Image 1: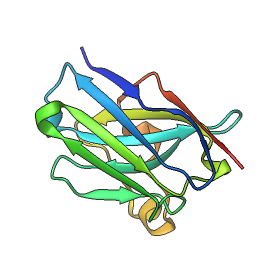
Image 2: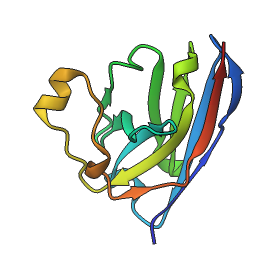
Image 3: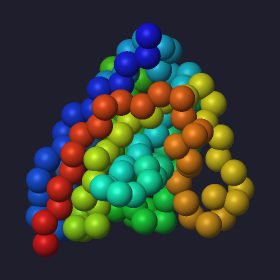
Length: 132
């Protein structure tokens, strides 16, 4: 069965960096689209970055230029490098996987990330806290 386990969350001051990892198992990692989502208390789960099976990447405007998504197919691991962190980045961060995650032109033009409904599988999450 599909398993996604996130690592690397923690507390950091504004301007700092963190690197999240997600170890995947139970499916052919290299053929799946992967993504990172985040959810703050009382808010919806928002897509912030995605990497398709062909390696192409997309980002929400809120993190573009600060966050970088990458993957290592040999290690079945997804990464999210987060730089220049801001207090508003505080949230639970989730790894996601899908055989073919859709991304509408509408969301792309608006600079939004992929919707949570576009991914079938999610991990349990790792908390990121950014203090001012």
